[in-house]
Image (cartoon, rainbow, N blue to C red; front, side):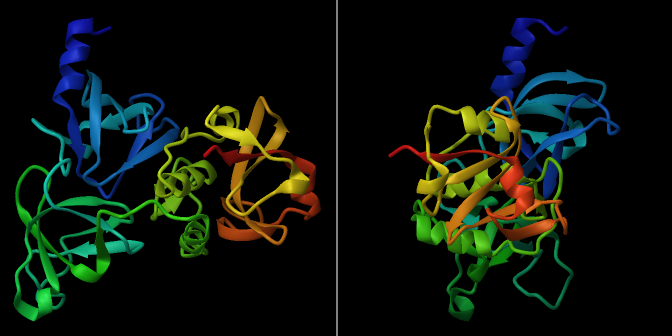
Length: 278
């Protein structure tokens, strides 16, 4: 086991993810189960290193093992200051030069990726934004794919955002628009409302930042939880009104979909509902 001083030094150094969606594993092996993900350009804490792997911590406090090739050491947090463009499209192509035809995309990054802005040339009606990439180098993104300083969303806007993901694939441990799991999706939706909730469904349902909501008193934006008991929560989604909820699930089709709470399958598994506290 590494010393406390070594672990502190690793965490202080930090890193930045350089894969579009980097998996976090339960142990340092590609054969281990995936517990979560960190998206491109996300800052991570480095807690421990072992045989080409690092145990890392993401911004929400979640920990897991990541291959060393998935991140770069960083002397400072990336995109923590200055002009930052955040991907607003479900996916955004980054290019080596400001053209979609001259070369194939350098990289495709997911929704919410935060990127440092190097310049915003006036040509082509300011269509292109030049970026500084993690670890050095430049790339270009189209302005229509990003937003600046996004404000917290209302419940109505959050539901509209959630609908944009309909049909995208379910992915166990997924935390990006390449594929979410159920709790990764609800965590993202709450994050866009300005609240960071726990990563997994069980801890979400038991988190003290949410208040109980009765099934007969559900409001749009409430989170609903399924399983066999409060101690054994296995699934979650967001209520959107009219007896319906939106979620990433493997039930029926493994995609983001809208289901009815009154469906016998979901009625049988319903455990509780929660509402974010003001």
